[in-house]
Amino acid sequence: MASSLHELAIAIEQELWEIKLAHRPKSFWYPYSTLHNVAVLEKLCAAAGFNLLELCRGARGKVADIGAADGDLAFFLERQGLSADVIDNEYTNFNGLQGARTIKEALKSSVAIRSVDLDSQFSLTGQKYDAVFLLGTLYHLKNPFFLLESLARITKYCFLSTRIAKQTADGQSLSRYPVAYLLGPQECNNDDTNFWIFSEHGLKRLIDRSGWNLLSYITIGDTTSSTPADPDHDERAFCLLEKRPPILSANPNPVPTSEEVGKTMISWDTADGSIGRVFVSVNGGQELLFADGRLGSTPAHWIETGSNYEFRLYNSDHTELLAKIAVARAIQ
Image (tube, rainbow, N blue to C red; front, side):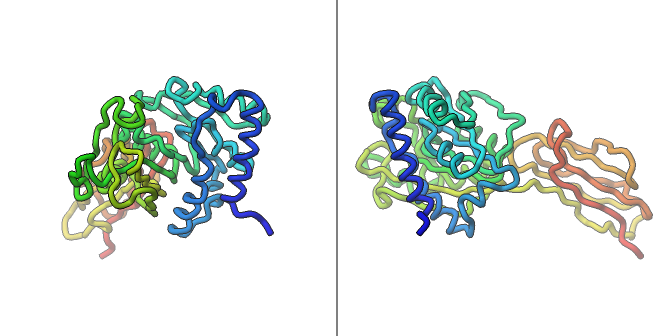
């Protein structure tokens, strides 16, 4: 009988540990299991009606593991026939990404390893993925809002896990509020790369405001009395996110014929915080810039009977069509 995906992941994790220990002592390697998360990721997908590997294959068959430790998940997914990138900051990675590079060489892998400072105003322009994995990384970042907005521009799906808390160490409730707790530099695991611990409502609001729809949500660990820093009261939230699609609308449409020249309100939202540019083409002619911005509404007060208008929302450099809508006057 064929093994389940998470059973296969655990078997491959053992293979990877044999490779690791053949090259460096155990203390060199990231000490926590990453492939045990595959079982939770499968549950997230099932709750949303998806199969994990089918979702990752998508249109490109390409995924990214961000904050990847030694890259175990990327190497596992490559073994399942996917193209995978490792993206992490070599200056904060457990072993400076030397672990991932060592495994890549040992496996003769095609996984791309990219060192990116996720706390900077980084850009992954030109990269497109079917899914990204951001597991156990969000609370290590100074600006989680910027990262989630940036990821919404390069992928359709995101698997996210992070630590959350229901109360402070002295018992003050966080659960009812959309907040984040800022850790002291040695407060959690004596690790000064730990920053923001969200409440559940805080995390869900961050997800919503950075351009994502929450498809499924699972928590593990201490799900009753979790705190931001205590290792005995550690709760983790796992989320499957889908990028919210850009919006372009015209209201009214068709445009009424009650006036000599028709008027409609064109509204748009890129949904990921990026600048969009709205162009219009009249009767199939040359595109003309109509409006721009992250989101907005602008009236078109020159809609004539007998003409056809197509409004098109593009990204900021006019290289990707995000949405379009045809507008015409009503037929009398």
